[in-house]
Length: 457
Image 1: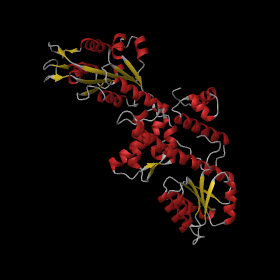
Image 2: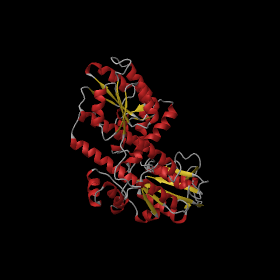
Image 3: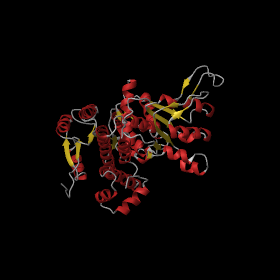
């Protein structure tokens, strides 16, 4: 059911100064303000309501000149609702108490006397971070529940299309060519094709064609007989023969030299191998899945890849999108890797801090999923706190602590975030997203170009 007005956001204010409470109620009149004068009232309100953001004065009775009650209230609020963003009020003389509160899990602090506009900005940022983390949890749950292929984490429309195409073609024996940048998970997808095929009980045999010297590649693929060449002290069964009644995954197929391309084509035509130094023709039953990060069309034009081999391998092509094209997946994968490595190494990290969520979402990931996995692993091992930060990940992140009032930068950040949210909620349907945002489709497309956002149109 549509509504013309949105529900006001809850906001908890904990302060025993009635005059200041009245001022803050007025400043945040668009919120549903819950006010508390001490720790007991604050905890009761936290138990009764789901509150995204709380403003907490550390000087609460019966210790109005100290910080013991305020810090105790912070601890109880964090225990009851770890997701709530707590903003600490402090004076210049009690700044060390605010820093201690930050170490205990407070989101941010502001100094008295209050600058209402600065406080509004801090609260707005806290609400955005609360919503971002909630969306992250929702996406993670959705990925675990709806990903069509077990073991593959995906929630973006781009990757869900890839997975559904794999579901369709896996039961057949068509040759599949996976195109994508290094680190996008092509071998994982190739293995998924195998597991969903009628050959699932047979072997899955991967070989990285770029990692094997040209002089050894023929022996690795086709095998050799004892004495076939110097050092061949025993018979060797090649990878193709080892994949009989299963799937052979030829990774980096673009790196196969021309001479070997001819022999590979001959095998694909009749499914017969002849070991190096052998005379016997061996019939095999193998399904081929290939992958490359190279431009095979350009290589064919330059005479570096055979067209006849390309068309044998390319019965179905699946393009695997880069991680920068699906930022929602980056956040979900980061959470997945964090949980996995924390359990594997017995570490204390239990989640991603707001700075890490923003940095993971905004980073371009030149190394794709492999780079993300390595950064998360290193951060989980090295961090000493409960939350992994952008600094732990060694990712760029500009902390806007409320002192920067550059309205153009703030507007650009907010615009990008709301467009991403609309695209996520509408499954990247541009017409629906534009309607949700109250703009035209051409305007949305221009904004997506401006913010370098991709989607299935």
